[in-house]
Amino acid sequence: MHVAPTQTKRWTIRETDEDAVTALQKELNIHPVLCRLMVQRGISNLEEAKLFFRPSLDDLHDPFLMKDMAEAVERIELAIAKGQKILIYGDYDVDGTTSVALMYTFLREFYERLEFYIPDRYTEGYGVSQMGVDYAIDNHFKLIIALDCGIKSVDKVAYARERGVDFIICDHHLVGDEIPPAAAVLDPKRPDCPYPYKELSGCGIGFKLAQAFAKRNSIPDEIVFALLDLVVISIASDIVPITGENRVLSYFGLELINNGEKRKGISSLLKQAGVDKELSITDLVFIIGPRINAAGRMGHAKAAVELLISDTEINSDSGAEELQNRNANRKETDKEMTTEALQILRDDPLLDKRTTTVVMQEHWHKGVVGIVASRLTEHYYRPTIVLTLSNGMITGSARSVRDFDIHEALIKCSDLLVQFGGHKYAAGLSLLPENFEAFCNRFEEVVNSTILPEMLIPEVTIDAELELNDINDKFYNILKQFAPFGPENMRPVFVSKGVFDYGGTRVVKELHLKLHLTQDGKREAKGIGFNMGYFGEQVISKGSTKRKFDICYCLEPNEWQGNINIELSAKDIRVG
Image 1 (cartoon, rainbow, N blue to C red):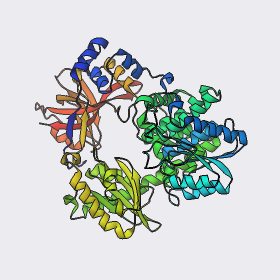
Image 2 (cartoon, rainbow, N blue to C red):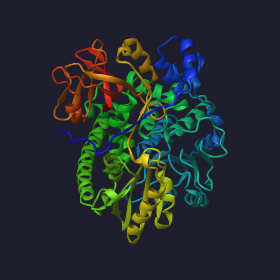
Image 3 (spheres, rainbow, N blue to C red):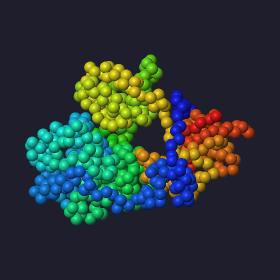
Image 4 (cartoon, helix red, strand yellow):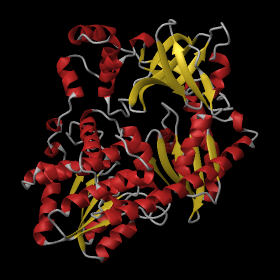
């Protein structure tokens, strides 16, 4: 039987402007719950609803609104005119590898003197590396286009410039104290950048550069828009907000993957995964993303780029098989490390007195520590760091809980760190072995003194209350048009109160809760609560005894033998 979690989740109903909901409902004449969802997404009238529900590629912003875009296009034009070698450089994660694949695919349409470079996770680390810059110098490259990295590489960009190598930086991370001395620095998060949308992925910035170059050089839009499959994979995997321009890019990227001519590498990856269905953002996160990421976690990430730019089915099939094998290896390593980490924590007598989790084993795989940190955060729900030993340095990944800024906490420990970087919910760090104990103590002190008690309780955010009687095809057909779902446009979570077992609720495989519910004894609804079998004793009716409870859930389509039914995907249950 699945063991119940140690903590009860807190339920939070999202605040909504009721007057705006009423006004929108009068204008659109649809279910008020759907109007509530729209208002929560900033939609207040019919025109804004049209923009949201009917995305258009015409809604994309002019790329030349981005600071330094004209200079970037001119520098590429100069390189092509002079026959200079161009090195396309990107990080080893999904955003970095898709960025490199995008820029390489685009430029090779009309220019041959190209190579790409992905740093090795273990010997070079994150971002622009000294080894990478030296490779460019030694091999007579005159231009490096750095994607998904470079905004803080001031010294390395200056070093390259002194040796006759220019940089174009396409980054989406926060700017440091100084802008690198590159030929162009494209980053909407620059304080002096007027670009209206700030949340593009690294690959999204690369797309805007391709779009600008195409516009200036009369290259057909179709060539640029054919790159949107790579952009949506980066958006999904890098967990950037799916709002504004990202919503448009995601919408048409998914359409290209699902209805267009698939990129050979993506087709081969799906074949290896045994997937033949219409893909959602969630599918990209859990099917495509991990396989691309596995390239750099369990070997060199250039294998991912080679797969994504592959022209032949033979090459793409063999490349996808390699990534499938690396992903299987990653899964096994992840499982072993998580099991070991949980045992270390269970054996720790001080575990319950802490607000943080920090675990370190010298033999753990550097490429998997971030995944294990996420799993431990889910299990104990507190800021977590998982560390290993690499080249004489302790290095690893940090993950946070909702609303707590772990990057800010690391800033307060920075005198004990060699290097760190990241954002509110995830970061990487390295430190000297002799500072390990002092760091653990300081990190605990900082978190303990700044985290609010409620942040240590898992939260379910509920968008709206919904009667089971209101769940029908008409309601769901509008609801699904809110997709693509993702950060800041998550799949809506509903709560239905006073429901009870209609006679078919049962625990399956000793793990999951198969639901057959009603609210009034007339209208019934079916669904599933994955890993929620522990609720069975509390909610399953016994004879004439009906146990009423509240349930929060998402609505999902369930296809069986060609029939599609709308079912509840339970998030949590409250009894009594």
